[in-house]
Amino acid sequence: MEFSHFSVMLSECIDSLNIKPDGIYVDCTAGGGGHSEEILKRLDSGKLISIDQDDDALANCKEKFEKYGCRSILVKSNFCELGRILNDLGIDSVDGVLMDLGVSSFQLDTPERGFSYNTEAELDMRMNVQNPFSAYDVINTYSESELKRVIYDYGEERFAPQIARKIVSTREQAPIKTTTELANIIKNAIPVGAAKKEAQHPAKRTFQAIRIEVNHELDVINPAIEATVPKLNNGGRIVIMTFHSLEDRIVKNKFNDYAKGCTCPANFPICVCGNKPKLKIITKKPITATAEELKINSRSKSAKLRVAEKI
Image (cartoon, rainbow, N blue to C red; front, side):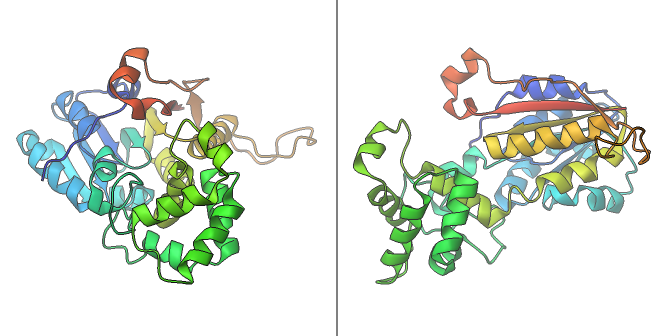
């Protein structure tokens, strides 16, 4: 198995962590191991915990990180379980946490994983293949109204009603089983004139929406940040890279909540909640990929990097 992966904004992510050689760090989404390995290179007595729910990613990282010995700890889990993972390892606090959200290049480029609308495969889209719930279940069991909600909310697709209706009418004849079947259904549901004006494939937003639903991608972001902040040492960094506006909005708002501290209503004359700011926002505006990176990796185009520091 060849594990191909391009680490988006690699230097920006690593620089943002302010890595100390004796520090303890967490890569919440190990993926192809690019970010993890760059952290490991900068450690001597420190440790890195790399988390992923994909068996292929973990197998690749295990082989890749053998030379780093006990500095590297691999854990199969979802990163929203960060607090439990650190407790199980007997680690009270860490110096930095990196979250590279979304689907990895390897998952997108492995046809049998069923993430891509460009290649023929069974409908799947599971990041954790032990999860019994897949894209097939969403497409063939959700009601029309449920499909419309998912496609509109998670794909921000204006033709969600037409696409949901077309999916339901098609599956009445036979179950929808493959990625190309679904991609063609979506393409035929969108008005021809609108589809021609699109710079991207007409199925892109719907595939994103189905993938998010299958893997509960948005649901785990807030719990992951909430688990991270109490575990950060003072001066420790939380670095999060997102790939679409829905993720970025959640991260931005959560960082702002922690930076504000007080949760009292605006009309209260004084603070009675006693909450103090826990984070200092380092990136007032998100970091984006350089022009040089955009030339060699188009997937970095939508990436946004936000950084905050424990106070």
